[in-house]
Length: 563
Image (cartoon, rainbow, N blue to C red; front, side, top):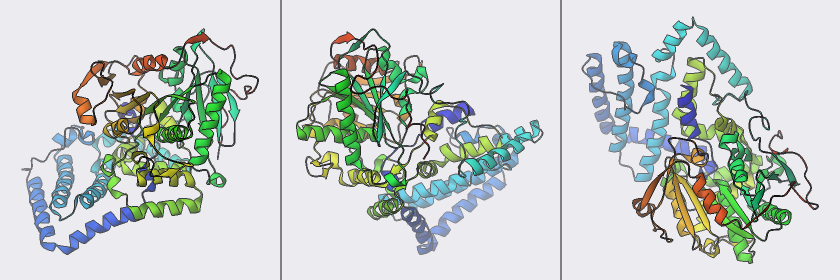
């Protein structure tokens, strides 16, 4: 089961997006809507109750043919098919699920209200699944018998540990095997510059020659930077170094309540500062930038500001799993977000100063409870097993706080659709206009990414003024779309056929004209990068220079700092 948990949870890593503005009033409102519809039309409610009652009679008499969706992994145990009591219990649950779905379809709601009602009802229905209990889970019962009850004792211990050490949230990962600098984030390098907000890490070259133009990676502000340098075989940093790229990485400091005033302007200034240091160290008049998720939004604002000011330091720009033109139906629970809810969420965050990382993780988990909560309740508590020791999940559990001011700015980007308005929205001291950005652009999406859906990432190709834009679609979801190194036999990606430079306007048009390429997209991206990284020069024999001397070894001090 551990492998299943790894796969499902790694596709559901938390990310900064409009859902940080989801207020409890929006959720309560969706529940109130369901209650209101139940009370206002008793005849309709009775009709569906009667239909559900007919299903129950068929179940009692053994005549029901209700069966789970073949993709529903909760009912894989053969007991659900051959044990009449278990089968009846499963069918009762599925009958309720079916009845709720039919009732929702019959309600006189607009599309937005229906989406809200469906989302909330699914969370409620998922929570009452028989598999979430010992009495309703045949696999857990068998394990308890086979282990002489030891699995239940271990499950109680796991639950106690979570209550005491994990703030009541069920653990998604066994953190014990991982240690930064030893088996996670092991690439050699040093902090070469430090401010109150960030550390700049330069990694030591691994080749005799390097490309003259360096690359700076801007990570998301809500996650720690070492997602770029997990194990050596999954390290984007190591891959860049081994291919002659001079590699720099920002490590954001985890803000405390006192730093709740840090806003987007502060982060953009930090990025500009980092680029200037990189240029000084490498003596390059260009710096290529790579960024993912909310780091991509930050990098896009940075590119817009630099273009507005006539600053030509930016070379090429790589954006991974990043949405700049969001639509409400792009994301799960997007229908729950309201204008009033966004205002309330910002007001509460401003009062607290920060949004704590574990609070964000908890809220995110409850939006995908089957994948991120109930799977682990079953594994950790009912089966008495440890959660998987998986590096991506270790990183995901190492969440950081979000300053209230920065949250407000991200929500402002979402509310105003600032990236889609050419010079209409003012942020970080300029009018945002991506059409003025002419950098060579590489954009990555993930086929199964539900956090930043690939068709939403494709819309970014229409926003920039760049004449050289490459779009690549990786066969995976969110972080796994990025962490897709060579050697994975199942890996594949999609690119535009032929040598046409201009991309189609829509994602669907683009998809029709693509070809499937087996293997990792990393070599394709690296070839693209190398062409835009200048001539080869002798590799420096040490990191930093006389102006920026090496400080602490990579991965630095901010990444391990406790708040």
